[in-house]
Length: 324
Image (tube, rainbow, N blue to C red; front, side, top):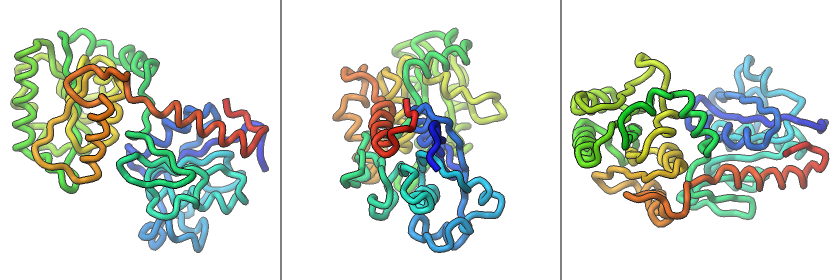
């Protein structure tokens, strides 16, 4: 069943953060990548990745046609739903498919060939890799492409302060009060340093937060992107052109990508963080990536090294597979 140049499947649900991580790693393997967005039906969705009984009927009929042989050489999943299918692939392929699961699957990691879980999750095991942050595509080439794609941002006065807005999550409130304090911080920074502010919302950012910040900063030079009605999402350009970044504390993905840029990265924390997120922030500070300074250790870029480790493991499993 193994082909000389097999596929890599990136398996996710619809969550943008999960898709970004799985695809960032898959594309580093330089194999043909097929992205499968799979959503198990109940009751499999309730118990994923624990419930293997029933196999492919866990999927709606239309998705069953996607999840079918020939099986890939490598499957990379991210998220709890994807973990059901990467776990399933190990058995369906008779161990031929090398299975990788990103994020803690909440069951024994030995059910996969490789598990990649951030250090703050506290998951350990013989086949577990523990990066500091989340996987992402940000490197020098990606940033250069981003600047080329959004040249107008480079014409804004510098220094450019990029402001990345996430959203509330359990234990972290991003409300109007937080928005006013964040806006005051941005105004103070621009008053001290000059330049402009590039403010960008995410799909999780409450409209009240975006509007509060927009009203408070309307007279500053720069950019405010509230959502798709404002045009193409300039997030890559904001990362590419910012001289420093200010990120809300809620998103591991956004903070990881900000720290991959190589400029000073700060966050605004107004209340104690949930333990897991607090451990992540502490790791970033201890590593020198988070704070009012350029990171002396260089940008936080872990995806390439993890992909190299994965390539070696796949070669050991399938010596004839062209994983470059």
